[in-house]
Image (cartoon, rainbow, N blue to C red; front, side):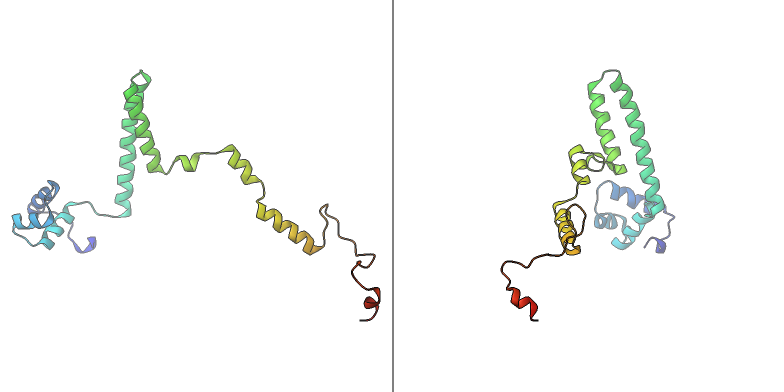
Length: 162
């Protein structure tokens, strides 16, 4: 959509944009300026920066830089003993971490959970036991020996006659 709109705003576009920024709806802006709502929308689009990955990346970097500047200011005040500044610094740091994708869920390392993750699950243990039986292995790793005597419920005469 941005490719179809000329990106050079006129003075009228800037007046429409100023009305829109003051909180008026698109229809009110169009009525006050004597244009159609579609023309008012195009005027606002010409005044706004293009929505592309490059512009979004610039805005992201700009916001991170602003947070870093505010963080440095309040960090210095917090180190001087201002508790309110320490609280603000902590909140700014939380926001910066959230923007960067760092959260307590991605960073937190629970030692018990880490140990549990290293151990095989109950399913894995049962599966391994079934596979040992299927392969004919004993628990200690040796192969099962063939039976040397008939089972007690079998008739020995039945074994000789197929």
